[in-house]
Image 1 (cartoon, rainbow, N blue to C red):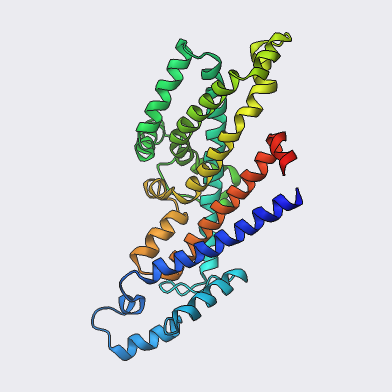
Image 2 (cartoon, rainbow, N blue to C red):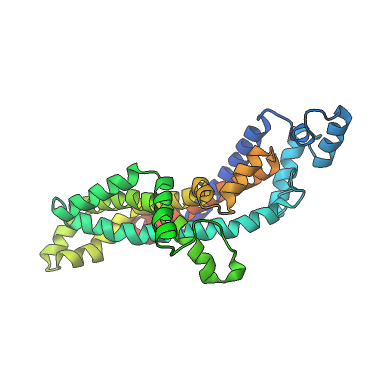
Length: 315
């Protein structure tokens, strides 16, 4: 087991190194000079040079890369070119919106998808199965921003149960902040729940055809008991993979929903930083999101070992 963990940690560190090089290289080749962008078209060359020196842009590519990576390892993401404030503080403020939103949406996704997938697989070929499959097809086809606008129209404008956008902040109370995230979380969760439901259904149908499931039924277990005691655990391997990928998407890919609901999250921060040529913010936020993706995959690999005894013995 220790050897398995060591291999996964080495793979994690190697992935982070490669990701940091790629992110830094891609941002560096983007045309345009942040200093010239900030000072405008009529700025003098000596003024631009002075601002480049102040921002730390006058060093070599290798020096700037090492300074950026070394700062991140110490928790120092640098200073924003535009706002002249620590990037770490900006990320921390926005993370308290994006992370709860992603966790809330992922919880709703799992709560909807797992029972729906179980229901559809246990009634394969019947009306209940066709209904679930049809609903998931609609959920996959319709984009989440359309769900967001429908939710705003019904629950914010017509019923007035929730606000149409904005985030009051957690200082106003936990339930107040959570209420502001309900509609965005539902809009994010519905398409992801449709995907996860189909994966859960397909995986469980495959497991139901295995010999050990027929043996369980032959020993006297009911269909429901056999699914819960033997089928569900064996069907979770591909489901865990999709859940890990979905969490990364919900954390990093909610920029459209954040725009629709005017949420001050990481997605809007990246969008604003790109439009303002604030490259240090773009690099830091994207690297943080990549770290979240890689760490999630690492935890999913550990979950594989916990769920599947065969992988545990092999590890």
